[in-house]
Amino acid sequence: MNMNRLLKTIFQTGAYIMDDPGRAAAETSDRVRQGVYDLSDRLRGEDRTWQYVLTFAAGVGLGVGATLLMSDRGEGIRETLTDNFERASDRVRSRAQDFATGT
Image 1: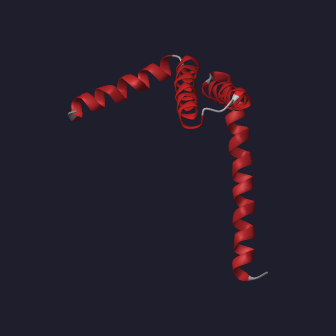
Image 2: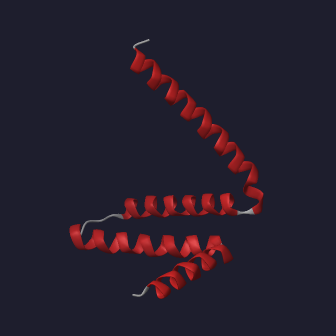
Image 3: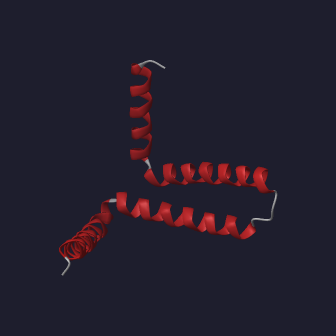
């Protein structure tokens, strides 16, 4: 694949995702989930009903979360997550520094 085709594919994929992130996330989740199911069936041949249910629930949760974060209304959520992440990283950094200095 030459560089122009690769760049074109990347840009088209980005435009597709930006056009409707909920649909893109759902379709991607469906494809990944189906691939996991197929591989699991081939390798084990076991009843995986609960695994399918949990995988589906996780996919739905990730899709909903991604949609909320990408939507216009997700600004408050993004700010809250950023604040929480910064506080957690400050705590980890402080504890690591305490551990390194032996205090």
